[in-house]
Amino acid sequence: MRRRRISDDQVYAQMCRLMMEKELFLRKRLTRSDLAREVMTNRTYITRALRGRGLNFAQFVNSFRALRAIEVLADPLYEGCSPEEIALLSGFSSVDTMNRYVKKSAGTTACAIRTRIAGL
Image (cartoon, rainbow, N blue to C red):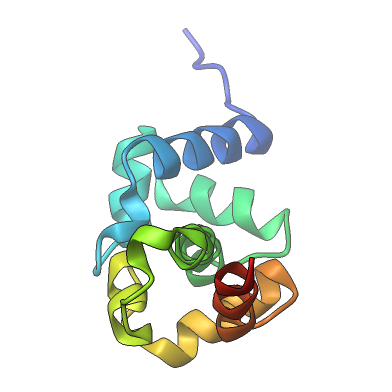
């Protein structure tokens, strides 16, 4: 009996769902193998699903971290947090990486997001 091959779109959708539901992006040392286990597939399928979207694994994970950083920056509850604390709360290991991905995702800097929210 042949196993039905899962499509790259299905793998990618499952990856995204699990990243959000289980907040896998907060794991400091998340690997392709870890994600493959969660999706119940192998690393090759993970890589192929990402490559089809022009992404590598780090870009994929950091895009979710950037979304979290944007949420934290926009939340008045975290108003007193330093950039280092926001980076850590979002799963980033450095403020520079957080700033780069926030700018790529939001089209503006983390500082500008915080200033805009504070000014409202």
